[in-house]
Length: 113
Image (cartoon, rainbow, N blue to C red; front, side, top):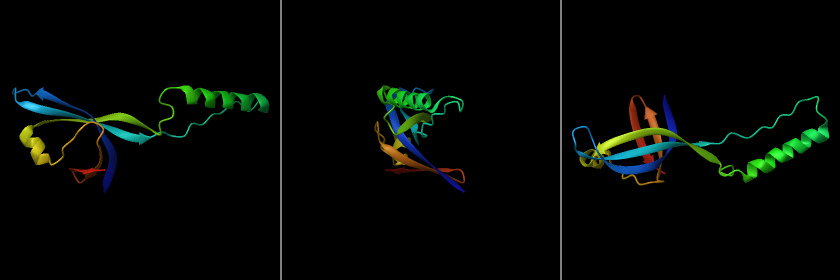
């Protein structure tokens, strides 16, 4: 059994680990599709008012910043790797780069998309 997750590199920063070694902190966010917006109005409300409320809510959703985006991001994972570990990882992350993460039997496999 395996699971696939779409990831995006949120940030890459130079940091020191607890042993004061130079490292890279790579933050990944999961990309998820937004669920469709469903507008429900009470059944006892007249149809004209109900239709008007639906149109108003659609108009509001169009002017809200970020409402037009088809997906949203959730913080997923942070890796802190030394330069040697990063080279062995064979992934050269930079901000906004996307990957498909496959999780299978205790292994994580990154594939650039």
